[in-house]
Each structure stands twice: as C-alpha cells, then as structure tokens.
Length: 268
Ligand SMILES: [Zn+2]
Image (tube, rainbow, N blue to C red; front, side):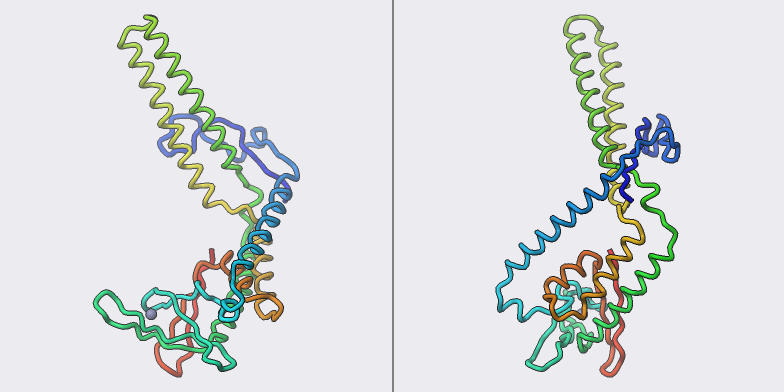
C-alpha cells in the first residue's frame, strides 16, 4: 500500500482500437508515486467521519429512539419492497409481516420475526465474507491503475484536437486548403475525438469496477462493522450508516410461522 501506479503509456483501451494496446504490465511505462495513496485514504476517512457527525446531528432525539438496525436496507424476498420494523413496547424489536400489495392488489404474505435473528444471520455472513476476502487471491493494489489520471490525460488530448480543428478552420478561411482537403482534415480530427471520447467511457467503466482497497483492507472493514454491531455505546444510526457502506441489501424471507427465516446479504 501507499503507492499509486499510473500508466503513462499511450494507447487505447477501446475495443475497436486501431491504436497501440495499453501495456498494463510493462514496468518501464509505469510511474510509481510513493505514499500518496495512504494520504488520500486518511483524508477520505476524515471526511467520512465529518459526514457521519453531520448526519447524526440531523436526527431528532425522538426519531433516534425509534430507529432500528437494518432500517432502509432490509428487503422482502417475496415482493422486493422494504420491510418495516416495530417496537410494540416489548423488549425485542420485530420485523412486521409484509402486507405490501402488488399492482393488482394481491398482498404479500412474508411473515414477521424477531429482528435479532436477522442480526445474527448478518453477523455470521459478515464474518464469512471477511474470511473469504482474506483467502481470495489479491487482485487489487498490485495492478492499481489510476483511471482518473488516464481520463484527465485523454481530456487534454481532446482539447488539443479541438485546437487543431480551429487551426484547420483558420487555414481554410485563409485559403491554404481547398474544400475537399479541409473536409478531409476536419473529419480525420473529428474521428480522433470520437475515439478519445470512447476511451474515456471505457476508463469510467473500469474506474467504477476497480476498488482501491486490498482484500485485507476490505476484510478489515467487514470485521470493524461486525465488532460494533453488538455495542450498546454505538447509536443505531451509526451502525446503519456503517452497514450501508458495505451492504447493498439484506433480503429476508419467512414462508410460514414457525419456520426459520432465511437471510441473504448483497454486499457492495
Ligand atoms: Zn413482501
């Protein structure tokens, strides 16, 4: 960690490429920047903490009392809608049976349950995922490509081509080219811009796919969340916002009263 590796080589990642291939593994073409990554990360973490404090202060104290773990991320496996929770003045929070109606008015019949059962299931799955990440072969970190930098470089190239287009127009107006040559040169430049724009789209897709955390760091995040879930000193909203950073959805189903509910977790 603590390194940003950037490819300075020219070329295109676009499928219909006619230019040189990007060489991700050619060492001479990499610029290695030491220690930036860690600095960026801790700044990000710092901002995250600030954001959390802001979110917390937005909650009215009364709303805080009624908060449930998994609020907003617990979904019904039968109808895909969000599940609601209730307190009912008893000591244990409950998942309400799902009665959401579909577009023709048929009501969902997913059964309710103690919320703590889902918490235990999620804790188990978090631990399991942390173990899986630790044993999985490391793919990030080593092959880290700074796509933001590649996008910026490509945008610069587009700027240059646009300047070239203005020059071509000037020269045509000054009579340096005939119309045929002018259109020829113009179209060539326009096709260069199309290729560069396609490259940016590719880089944006690759950027979204690439996580800048190593598997060990990801596993650590899962373990950190796991460790605070039972804590009574951490607010439910804080627990939920930490859960939302790593979990997309918790999906719940209980077909019949007396059945053990089934819980599936979709990790981000
Ligand atoms: Zn439902």
